[in-house]
Amino acid sequence: MTGRPVAVGSRAAAPSALLLVAAAAAWVWLVTRWGGTPAMPGTMGLGLPAFLALWTLMTAAMMLPATAPVAGLYARTIAAHRVPRMVVFTVVYLLVWTAAGLPAYGLAAALGRVTSLPAVAGTAAAAAVFAVNGVYQLTPLKDRCLARCRSPVGTMLRYASYPPPWRDVRAGLHHGAFCLGCCWSLMLVLAAFGVMNLWAMVVLAAVISVEKLAPAGHLVARAVGVTSLALAVAVFWVPALAPALTGGGMTGM
Image (tube, rainbow, N blue to C red; front, side, top):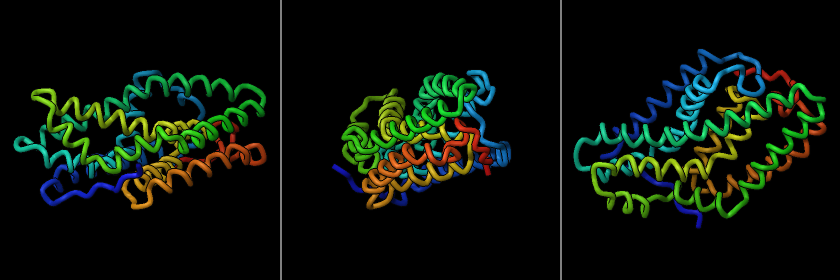
């Protein structure tokens, strides 16, 4: 099941626009704060609270543009108080990604220690990161999660059956879980490029949006998987492909 990308009617345009504005604001902050910063390994010297705050802002910038059409479709099921309820849906959705920042912090800390080992260790770690993403992109679980994100009409009917007052919370949790299942391995790749490497973030955000919204998005997901597997091999010959783990020195933007 590949699904067709969701289309949003004019009735839901305002809630979708709010998510796009929020994403744009997040991008502006990230570019002005981190633009030009060299790729840094690990947690970039941040403690857990600061890392989670930055991780949440980063995921808002990367995920909300691709989520806006689904959020707009959900808004069409809301009869009253649409904007406040959409805020609840979006905040809960982002909290799912905030929770994902906990294992991301642990992984980033572990990979940060690799950079103090011989260079081959960083290269091997980068190859593993690329390989994990490549394999996952080609799995049935990725296809299933992507199909739910691309064609969520049936899911919207399920959300409509949720009783108040927790309907928006449950809907945000449910969609956030499928989005996480769809994109976690793509976010893992940032460990090789640098968690706050803005060039890598822009490319991955574009990949996520194309996968979810383009007519051939499911084929793009497979192509990205094959490319990632190729990078897992190529990084042994070109270590600079993974600057955060091999000291390639790539700058943010």
